[in-house]
Length: 434
Ligand code: URA
Ligand code: CA
Image 1 (cartoon, rainbow, N blue to C red):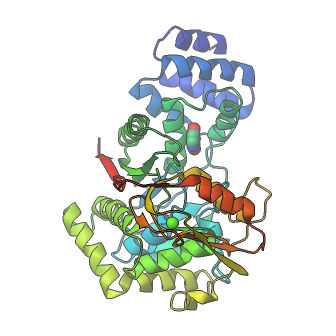
Image 2: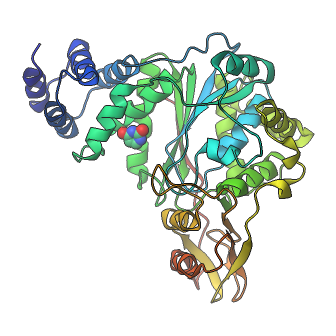
Image 3: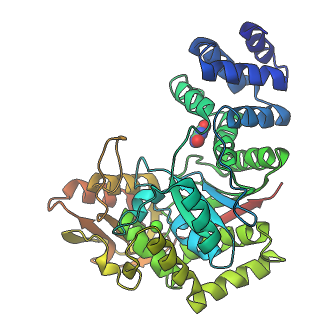
């Protein structure tokens, strides 16, 4: 097989065979096919697209390019959740203990974050002693025992995707639905889940800014998953404003605790119940979505979900007393209120800009090498549609710097007030099941 023929075939709009896809993925991973030929091919894919079969074959070729996690020693149906990424997205911290508390095994591998706030592991590390450096057999044992454990990224997962994604980044070929969908799905499948619930965000703070694009990506991923034998569905949820109130690592842990107690923000709670119901149903722990939701609501009311968080934290070395006493979490030195300068209604909270404000405080990493400050961040006091009066707080800012005029300026510019009443955005746009 010659790479030039594969490029020409895709350039002219024909469907590549599984053998041709394996040929270029394996050749690229091992280094026998150069960047310039793969660049030409990805550009051809960008313009010509890929059929459903090609997308499934590409995904599996990338899965098979490296290690695959074997979760077969864990009892039950392993359901993973994936979010396409947003601002102040506290769902994983809530969902893990919540679905585990009704018997769904949560075997999560997670990484550190780049951008607005840390990743799930960074957030959890604001709990003193908590660590994710555990051995594989310990991880499996913990999931069987407690239904939940989280382990740091290890092994060589989807090396083909790593190389391809880096190349796409510098060849203007990231924005291709078949390439994005297979990239995301290959990582989820290699991580070993039997079933996958996707939270595809839409709006200003999301990777996909419009509902149409989000739907197209969601459908592409759902088809790939189902075509390769992993039950997959997607929820399209709003990211026109940050989710919940808190943006920042320890602040989000506190928000997750509040939510597991039943006192969380309405939007975060609703999204967790929606995604969680799908996870419980896919794991066959309930006979309907309605029954699944009732189980989760009951678990929050009874305290079982909160208890599960304590067990999860302490079994990985964490100080679980923070659950009853969140003031033991890292605390910022300075607390400021962002006071509204006018009367009206909040009409816009530009999610990515507000996320950047949290990053300026030190809550997120600007580069992989940045050190994050777990204590700092923002807690919104108003969301879109809320009435606000002159002098009332729009947000509380937690900082370890005394001078935060740049942060305040950014927030004032991106939390917009209108004199006419504005409706709160729809939280769950669509659910895509096939
Ligand atoms: N995220 C991924 O993991 N892959 C893409 O291609 C785009 C976003
Ligand atoms: Ca939040």
